[in-house]
Image (cartoon, rainbow, N blue to C red; front, side, top):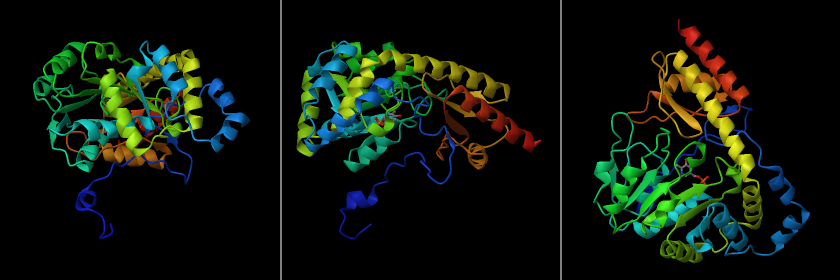
Length: 353
Ligand SMILES: *Cc1c(COP(=O)(O)O)cnc(C)c1O
């Protein structure tokens, strides 16, 4: 880094996104994208006139999109915030509510610790239990910003509503975030709790279940006062955070929500197939409510399996991190992709004999 940069940035460990290699074509099971195309409605909506409209600034209030989200999610537009990917919303949340420190699990989405150090916040890192479930007792009554991915990444395990409510009710002076990036794949949506708990923010993304990772669109549902906080930060950084084409794409995606629901059902079936096949091959597979599975072989290390699969044209995710170094995270793709994945794993394990 240059000698001009401030110390806190110099020391910062930035987030490392999953590989997006352009050198050859891989079966990409490493960044939890959808194997399905955006809906036809989305494709048709990005037409000549929408491209022409790029001449003008986009609607900074995102009114049409917010109204549509409110309708589909059975809430009010004033309870909705939209952002440039849910990462931006999380960024704003850390900026706004982390003053007394922030608590999150030791094994969870990697961006939480990055935001914490970006803003110089004190992190309380609470280890997941032995079975990788959340140690919810330890989140109770701490009155710090609390961030919980549910279903969690990279484990796929969700928190129960009973435990979440304990955390919410014992931390009424601080904000609790539920990151619902993977909720559409069988998780429990807790948005209804935002009416009772004024400190709850649920964060969603179009990147996973709605096949729009490249469009950068996320949203949050919360009490109106919290939404106003986030709006204030947005208008203090980038009022045009969600561009015109993405607003149009998001609106049209929601018009075709049945399409994405049926895609999520297919992913759930393919997840079941993958789990069963991996178990037959002697893997331990965590129970997942997400569009990925987290699995450990008894015969090969996580790192070696990752490298072997890459040689074979398949990308998965391996985290070189305490407690989970023996695991791999496999995004659930199309059934054809999962069949190829399983047969490559079989070959790789066969070669070890
Ligand atoms: C993918 C992911 C996000 C980021 O989603 P974007 O909307 O693409 O920024 C946020 N949280 C979790 C847990 C994720 O896995």
